[in-house]
Image (cartoon, rainbow, N blue to C red; front, side, top):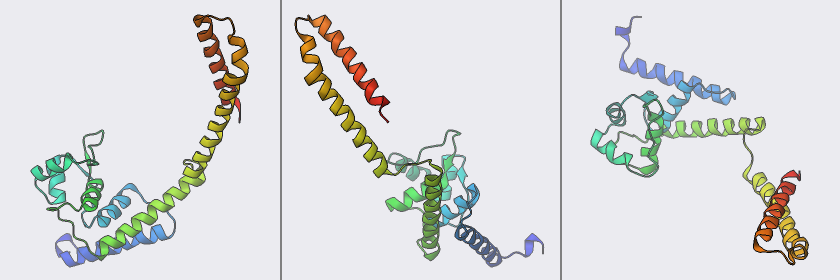
Amino acid sequence: MDQQEITADLASRILDADFQNVVRKVAAGKPLTVAERARVESRAAGSTDTTTYAKTLVELASLLGVTRRTLNGWQKMDGAPKALSNGMWAVADWREFVRVRGLKGAIMPHNDEALKARKLLAEVEDRELKVSLRKGLYLLKADVEAQWNRRFAILKTLLYSKFTLELPPLCAGKDAVDLQQLFEESLDNTLREAASIP
């Protein structure tokens, strides 16, 4: 079958079948490629276009279905996606920004496919986070807070001990320069001691 025989309906069915392969891949716990993830993000934002990056603002505006002027206004909003280091624009980030903000003028249909894709994207992100946690790339907020609180309590105890029990007797008869040096040495020693406690 040559390309001229492919109708819009047939192309749509092929793309839908291909997208279902991506869904099955996620269900099997396999990681997505960058291109597959971009397709899911596009669907989640309500678009069937799978363009990952726009080279210019004009191209980005066209992909979002708005004028360049509208896009310029959106760029000034808090949280608007910035250009990447290579000067290109992440289309999926912009689609999500438009969807979350409910911005008018963009071609962003809200349909069942978009909802399914958003659900799939959430599942992908959840699995990626769980894998990252198992690899030790991230720490749970509660663990970080507990460790911080423990370390702070140790430091506080050491500082109180140094400055209320040990230093006052050593301060007797010292001038301001000697006191400053004594305090600096005490503080440095206390911080080193706190850092060495496991």
